[in-house]
Length: 218
Ligand SMILES: C[S@@+](CC[C@H](N)C(=O)[O-])C[C@H]1O[C@@H](n2cnc3c(N)ncnc32)[C@H](O)[C@@H]1O
Image 1: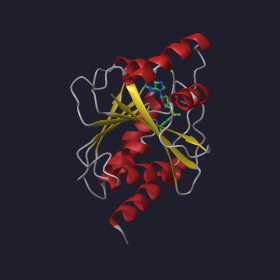
Image 2: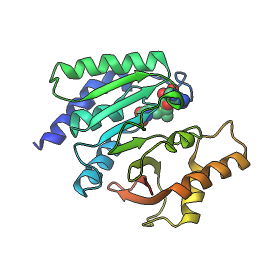
Image 3: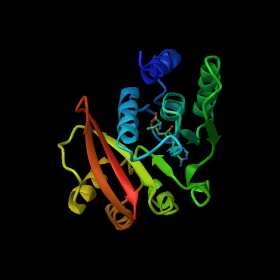
Image 4: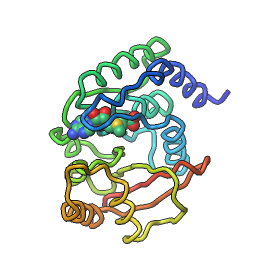
């Protein structure tokens, strides 16, 4: 079996019990975990196409139970950092990491319990890809990313269009974000700001339900 698939299967078995629990009441925003297959396919695509490499640092802003960072580090060998505000979710991530450590300690995965809007990581780090489910407060954080680095988010469905033109990118951001606190004016202001700083693409992966949105700071 291909080593990546083998390791992905280990992640699935380690996360099996936690997947069965309803954790939706936890977290700063309603919690749900990214489907594993989607982040697996997205990272595989980005690595195979030379967009990121094994020396890239993958950061999940709002990492929940840590599944995306576990896949990035344990399966693909990236340096991975998960930042999660909720103590309970953070502790679950730490426990699951220690279960992965029973298979090997040879992967680079760190969890930080903090408000990601208050962590100043990006000024020091280069060669970074930041993942977020797209909450409004991530946009000011992305201001700190260095030129050439990437931001990735995802949506289900949608049609193929590569690269996104600015109007499509704007609409996608406007529609998909979980912006419970923001007015339309605030959303528009933040989205304009992001689009001034980033070039964007949309990729549909196989199965076609997986759409990833990739932004590169320019
Ligand atoms: C939709 S879940 C995504 C979990 C994880 N990224 C995944 O893909 O499985 C969003 C997570 O972001 C966390 N979160 C939201 N705002 C945050 C903040 N400002 N700082 C840290 N964590 C935050 C929530 O507690 C929640 O666990």
